[in-house]
Image 1 (cartoon, each protein chain N blue to C red):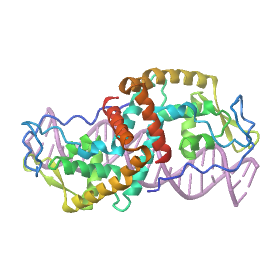
Image 2 (spheres, chains in turn orange, purple, cyan, red):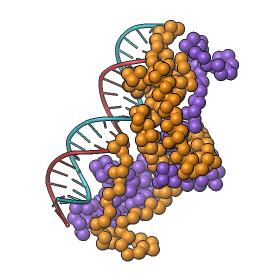
Image 3 (cartoon, rainbow over the protein chains, first blue to last red):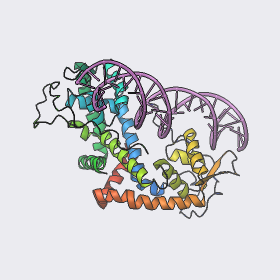
Image 4 (tube, chains in turn orange, yellow, brown, blue):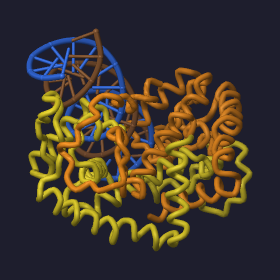
Length: 177
Length: 177
DNA sequence: TATTGTTATACTCTATAACTATA
DNA sequence: TATAGTTATAGAGTATAACAATA
């Protein structure tokens, strides 16, 4: 939550650092020593992807502040709801979370009574995962917040058609790149 | 470099864990206990964005293996080349890197003789940044690798027009979301 | 007093090895 | 022996406070 704006501070000060400049023959009006040229960076897939992802996660956290759910926690609740009765390994690996790292995440959800581990009777090594009633209720509220505050914002920004195109392209990149 | 595939291992083993299931009344053929349903997750902006970003960074690292450049290092070289004579604070903040964290990154580039810190004569607190000749040469090679191996792959996957549309939408999300 | 680069530090994510209890 | 969950641990990435030199 302390993430937001830390990268915009250095502004009005040295207005004559034209000494280290080399052959920068861009059309620069007087007093333009502040703004840096991003250049090819703004066309780099990885760069814009990372910046966009940070912004989106930041917005997600703000939208979910009342429920205290991170993107990772939300994805676990969604996946367990859709696939009740699966074990930790299955849920974790589907989300790209390593099993050791999934333990603390689950401990958190379980301590908040959102999710339950149930020892499987078939294979007593496994912990079957299920949402609690509270977990189902919280997830329902979370979905509403995401839809109305988070995803709706993307619609406002890009329009319905572009929003769908963006998701589709990102899915393709995620699975085939 | 040890990042790649760690999350896809649990596959052929328990084919009869159909006991913990509750009211999963999806059309499931026999022996379909392996694949989980992603459900709404596959439509979640943050989810696909993060997955895509990981894939793209992974591919970037593979493409750059011969030059040993990370996405962050590449972005610093690009920005310093485009804006020679700027100081650490300016370069770092433009990239969203905090000044304390920029020190080690620069130490690395400087130790490899790709970038140089030059004490400013105007303001002796500042370190002006410039690419060395080797840094310029390495960056030129890096750009070629990125263009031919990395960005070209996106063209193959989405097509030129869609690639440009994707970058444009991500830029918009990054700056306006 | 304020700013630049820096150190120290902490917290989150991510990754691997190894333990235990089961199979 | 192999697997599920767990612990311990290490490494990145990211965040803040505070210091020395300089303004």
